[in-house]
Image (cartoon, rainbow, N blue to C red; front, side, top):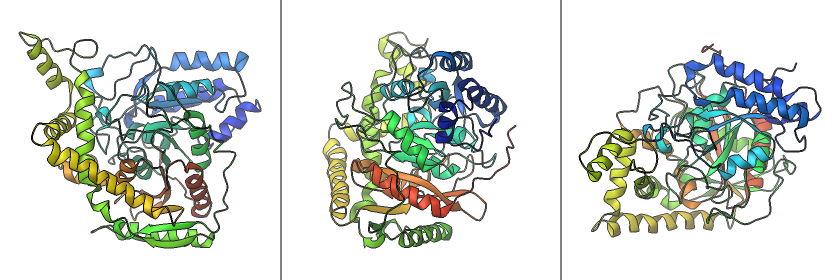
Length: 485
């Protein structure tokens, strides 16, 4: 049997399609890995019996023609899965079992994929380290004292540790790209509206976007193909023809103009990240791309803008968790109002409460114009910066994060320091455009570092091709001991 720990998603698909391996063998392999990896705490819920049953069925009667035939996958616990617990990493949804399936996961099952389980995440996707989950922190497989990033930390950790051949996450301000960078994996945030938000537990509706997390760029293209598509249930879904991203992958990027924004050279940025960026620029030059210096003048306002818009939308979205129709309900309180207050006080964690309070404040009477309205205007300016640049260039290259993975507990008492981790990723969400993070090297402690490629809306194929070309030249090697077994 081939070594499935070394096999990519695309390779596993070929092996199953050519009947060199069965879906049941693949599923059993990943279940065995997951059972050995409890120390990483990357799963909240597993559904092994059901996945083995589906794998057996696939091997006898399954449709071999799907993009993901008989492939077992684990997904972030923010995607509603019919009949299977969906918690969003929160006590308030600890026992919530949806009666419906999210459009994105449904798209995966239609292509033949099988659910292995639900992956840990920061509570309601609010966090950059996967330490805010009610179900405990997730650990980075790179080392037992490192965070995997967040909020899709469970997804990144499970992928890097070979608990799943690929996975999906959500990205509101960097929650796919930052964990991908921290774990040496590939993560793509698609154009806002390319993947349906229907059935995903909402954090900030104008920023949330589902995306693929994989071991390489080819797998990323394949998974994006499987999960994307128009959905009439989502009013923000883009009605466009489905693309064959994996079939159209190319390393030919000759003549493309790549912008290097001066604003991403931030104060106190580690020399290793500066050097990595330089290495990425050299690789692009060798591939025949043209490097252009650009300016995105409103970048410095992106973080404060995000931390007004996102909490405002969160405070509105999370108002539905009141203990009445579903979810956790407090037993304390003499009347309805007290029950509401106690339910939310006991059911939400500190970071979620912090963001609800910020959001409610910026939306309150007398402050709406001063904060929220102003933030929306600045958001437009940030988008205009990108639009203006993309008239003369094809894509932008930046670092993915301002540092490598930090230690567990290092930033938990300093929310501002934690928020600064999203400095390179947040502008993309505010502008609604696509970006991919690819592993590009290591720091002097052997921790992975990523580079980010950004392009204009609906140009996923272009950034996939640029990333694919760079990946060949970088030839990143993921190496660490399986210390958790």
